[in-house]
Image (cartoon, rainbow, N blue to C red; front, side):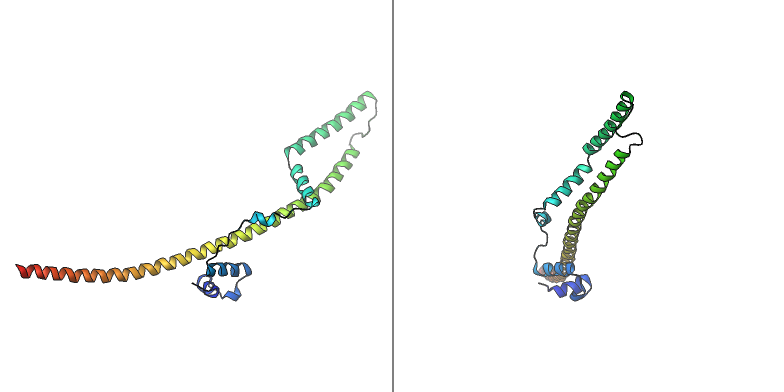
Length: 185
């Protein structure tokens, strides 16, 4: 069994102390022959706060076709109602260029944007943790493959020497058989 510092110097080409924390963790796992893969989803099983759930819901709804459809319908109703009131009464509650509508849309965007960013920040943190875990698993797999290659090379060299010994022994036996057969004639 190898030690973490042997793994680091032999397979990673650096002293153990020079490695970053993730690489040290992988070297320790390889040396101890322990698995490193884990269920990352469990890391995120902590119940999100009300604000986090609300941010996720706003981001989910704000990026859906339902929202786009409702938004377009609201705009059409707003413009249509103003046009109807203008034609029927001669006045409207929000005359063209729809300054009140622009105010509402600006307030919606001002509130919605930071909420969506909060949700995206949470998702990017999850993605970062997942990427770090993937790196650790991939590095461990690479080191394990290198160790397997080393073992196979060692076995091949050992078996080659043994095969040559067996072949020499067989040649001696064959030579003895041939001598015995020629002497018997």
